[in-house]
Image (cartoon, rainbow, N blue to C red):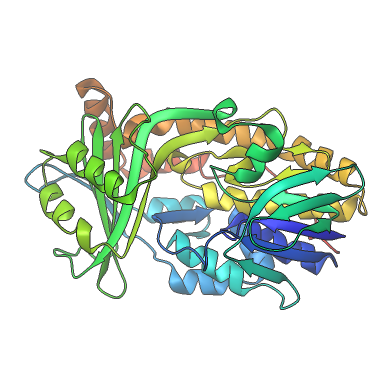
Length: 393
């Protein structure tokens, strides 16, 4: 089949890889003029780790990733009051765990694509006409074309979802938190392979030292959802205002904001839909079932969704109705459980009260005890899903 994939983040290239391997003619279109860089450092594990292994990209992910040694909570003065060894994550996953900048992961997946995958940058879809046999696509820049299937892999604010299923507001569940991430060069101090956090009521500031003398910052704060404007300078102003007066190194971190190499700012939301498919159009990744950064594995889950969709299309031998049904049946309960777990973790990123803050600090201290850490992490890092055979086999 001829299949158009909209979005060249994580889900899009993963789907393109497996569809091309199964023999389909794939076109990948991305609104940006080049691959998007930046984003925060993600924890990569679970079933997505297995998908990466089957793609043959795992060695490169491990080479470019980080094995964090410690997670450390500090007070206003920067003194450590709670810490635990990150070895607990590796023990719980059998060593199949790595932390990597999201942009690096997306780049690795994109570089794995077959040369026969058509790639179009600087364009996107303006309109879709699904007549039941083909989908006529009108692009913003290029000439109209027809495809057998169209897949929206264009993220939390998916334009394909809006065109086919309706406005985002119908499906978005805002979790009351806004996130910002940026990286700078030359920041001091550096704590190598240590994820350092400072948490206050309503906000959290974290930093992580990366290669090339870069430091990545992740800041989260309680919000009503209106802070996430589309204007870059307005977002930076909001961030400075919401973080003003915070302790630890916050004022020094914000002073480097103007030097940021990359900058990300958005609402922390989930996308919950009764169906991810309609006619000859399907959604994958955050466009379909964004779990939010609170889940800790959104990118890995996006890869799983893409893999399963490609596998179901292969198993159904081109019957997209059967494939779409199998895709949703296999993944919807699984993704919903991940979303529910993420909601429960929200206070850890921006506690609502002093009582919540005290509870979070207490839990972090307990995680320093190996027995407690092993019990806490045991089930939470295991994905209750069995991946189907690779597409095309």
